[in-house]
Image 1 (tube, one colour):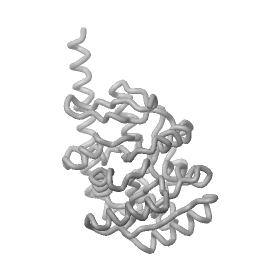
Image 2 (tube, rainbow, N blue to C red; image 1 turned 45 degrees about the horizontal axis):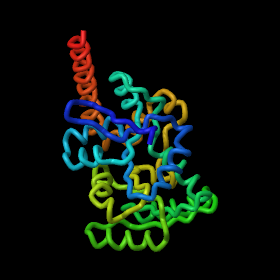
Image 3 (cartoon, rainbow, N blue to C red; image 1 turned 30 degrees about the vertical axis):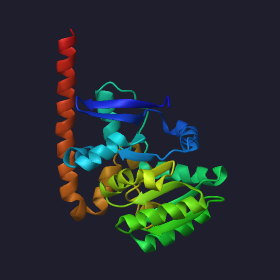
Image 4 (cartoon, rainbow, N blue to C red; image 1 turned 90 degrees about the horizontal axis):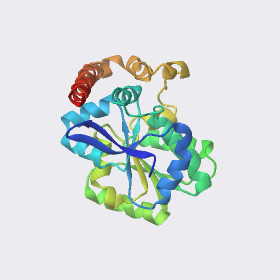
Length: 258
């Protein structure tokens, strides 16, 4: 698809299927993407994801094998611009999920929501049925093991589902989808992290002004500072160093080209 391009970060790390379009174009893109009728995984890319890719080989594989990768955070937009890649805007995962659910009813796409918290799943299903017209929505409580994967695939196939959203901690959700993509078989499968809680009304999303100034990460941190402190500091300092390394590599390459 013409909206996808290779995003080369380093000599040995390239993301082949990076979406370079804007949010306004994504509806048309998604209709075509789902219409291809082939098993496909989506990964949302932010600073935390790059950090995990540097630490977890299975997640790095999931990222490089993903059929669609989008810029979830302003950090990725900044990194791409630094490297000379055009990127119109970030596409937060919760907004992409909301857009996909709005399209699902009119397009006749059945949706499955897989998560680890039954209460959140029940609330989310009801909210989805209230918010999104003509939506066929099923919920599944995630379990370990290939038996669950096979049973889930069979149930989704019998319902004719097209979209699968999985809410597990990162990097588990993306690795699970990558390793079971062919069995699950849906044309749009996406790990959405905490989006279930946000859409279910169980967690607050950053106000629009915070999002406008790319401070949604700070808002999330302030909601749970004790739980998020170590991970936020680790990913932030790592990403700062990573950006500096990419910038220096680009400068060195430019000098050699002169």
